[in-house]
Image (tube, rainbow, N blue to C red):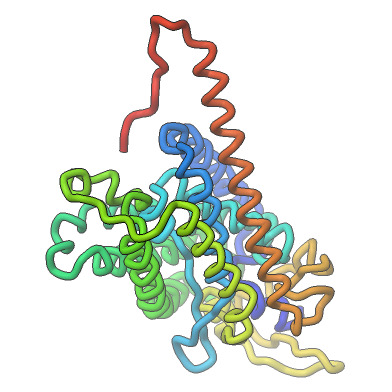
Length: 361
């Protein structure tokens, strides 16, 4: 397979783990997302719906900007802790999952059979660990550096735990090419460095939102500390939402051109043991490595594959803007469906009875 088939992707490809393992984690992902939908019903009010869509759009945009971590290796935002802090663990899991689905179906990034593993690692493990740590650390660290420190630590450790999810999946049914111990060590080392970058991005974003609209930050609204402290509002709701959208579009449409072209931590791990050779004008992997088992994406020839427009990487910015719009629209549609279900249930309840809600977080 061509090297570009593996280096341009940001998520696990088809063939990295076997079919039974892919099926197991597809079931895990469906169950986790089903639970998230059920629990998210109580959190999706008028303000949460557009905010959730923008968080999904922003995560999609920032994931396009790979940053270098080692010679020949890059990293990118996973977004689990960021989503959990801003919109809560259940809506946050839906945000990250929607981003992964849009990337797989429109941009041929992340295998179709690998969607379950990618969602499990990034949308379930990353979000859950990120929120759990942020919720526990806020009372301890907030006075020593504010919510930015909390966001940094939660994102760093959430990233490492999400990476370890891949190690577990590889141990269960991984393709030949490397030992589990080697995979575990390299995934930990690279994602510890990626986690630092993720922590910085998450902290900057969370602090910016807190300074503008602290009432829209789920983590603060969910704590006694936030309920007791006065909330300063620097922007109107519409002003904040339009500003957030503008930043996402700017990152996807402009900053994406500055992204590192080197493989990310996962791809670098799967390519260990192989060398790159040129055959017939195309680069290929030779040797014994996990990546040689990866299969070409079923939608590799789609118009937006590899975050280009018909293969023209000069139009990456346009592809990014389209992806931002698609992520926002998809998440917003999911939110509308969930809220419509809530409305139907509410109208079916008699006037003298109360509508049961999921437990509070």
